[in-house]
Image (cartoon, rainbow over all chains, first blue to last red; front, side, top):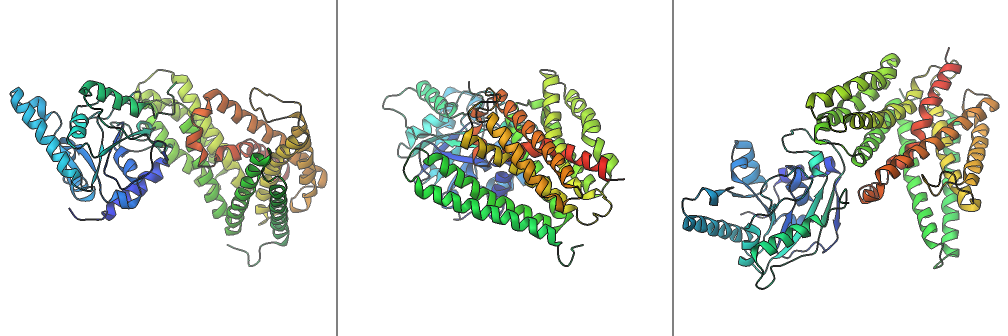
Length: 219
Length: 317
């Protein structure tokens, strides 16, 4: 993978920042060149670009999103954006559910985690939306297990929760044109899987870490 | 077309504003030195931050006025856009309002300013109160979400009225054809903005200096009777003293300024009430870094349309 940021990526990031007027708060940590997995709530197609644009440029160049294969490979434009512009790692949603046997499911799951670990490599970071799909924005949905397995596979990588506010109002699911409301992005305190921590406990804790960063309408 | 040399009285006004800025910067600097490390420090830092912001705002406004009609129009259109954005961010909307909101930002609001630009008064005057008033609820209804329907339609309409319709009356002053005042209308816009904003500033200053008795403390805890009376009277006096830049006599100018001040106060109070109602503290973080444009122009939104119509009724044949 070549170094540096694709010019179209920088352009789209600038546009997304303009539309959302996003204010970035590093509440639980500072921007860092450490390898990280940024995981956030997901309500809009703009989520990734906004989160990505909030990172300092040297970190942006090596931060890749994880995105759904079925959506991003549907048209040539999407495929180009995902593969060439943002260097996304495309994963198949529900691949494990499609498997014919538990063994196959386990195998497919392990391959997915290996792909993600490979995408992290020695210096990259990832942007991850563990809900797996865009929600309505009312509350943060259940997290898929991938985050847990990846965290176990790469315990050296920091897990940074983030909350994207108002994105569902700017460009909700099913809409094509954005409304330029203001948004807010808050990064929380890095976390890890505790020794011996169960999958469900960790995923709930991670979900809570994301939704606790919510500032607006949380009462 | 740009006049070769902008008129001298306008330059005097600019000079006066510049003088005020220099004096207030100087006072701010002295206060900072004197109160180093004591309890009023936070207030003084805030004051100096405000003064710095005033420099920038005055510079932008002066440049737009010097560019001419298009400059003012673009500036006010941008202010409207930013204000509407702050407002809509604050007001709870639902998924079903999305397209109506898109239209509000990208069609209705720009169209309002376009109508000022082409000087189509009849259309300009009814576009938002009549057409948008019908369009907004209809387009929400088409989407089919009836929950809080009336509230949602009303909130969007109110935002359009305040941020787009009311405010667009400020640059619309430039299209009034006052006999004997042709080509000088930039002065009238500057007059409105100076009196309105000085009224805010003087109310703040009087309130800080001698303010004791609260007005409407539930709505805005910082507003006092002393600030209100002192601010309105001194800004009215200032406005009266500026009669020479307007088509008004000194007495008429005092009346106009007094009206601007009272309406400005009402505008500030209404927008404060809305913020209280919404519980703005939850959203403070979103707005803070953006300077709260709506907070700055709330008084102008109420003063501009009435001032426009008073001038139009009494001075345009």
